[in-house]
Image (cartoon, rainbow, N blue to C red):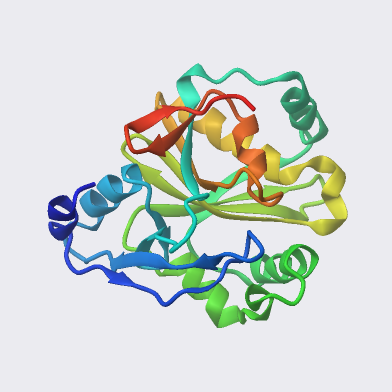
Length: 241
């Protein structure tokens, strides 16, 4: 997007640089704006296609001083065919039930969220998020948002994916899973289910946020192919590595 096209969406701000949570030794800064009550859907659609991500009522994109490793990516859902390892993930989780629920935080979700953060993020700042913080993350949205919940045969919540519906697909905002069920590959499973939902509805894209080649936490996304990356020349198929 050009500066002129960005100006059409209102005021943009830039955060101060701070330590990057994904790449040691790098500093992170973001440009962000607030989605307005009127026209939030139109704003969000355009900014998502320009590589922005949503958090609460804000949309942001990294503009780091010495790094451009964060690459927006989206799965081409209509052309997607699951690989052998992905079919194994689907089989391991065929006992789970999926339910789409409104974007309303529950105590059950928050308890799973806490267990997930303690396992994945240790003592990082996200691990200190309160129930009110979690409620804000889920409920403070001016666009069409829902939660996909996944339960085992006993009814236990083992996974949840906060998801935005777009005119051209879905955006995976944040997902959590039960640490004791690591063998299930629930993170991969929830992406596969989003792709399947998009495909069933003839929606072309599933936006997965930022792919970082040298970050173990973010590099897995390029295994969902075909996948496009946003660069200076627009959206292009991400080359295999």
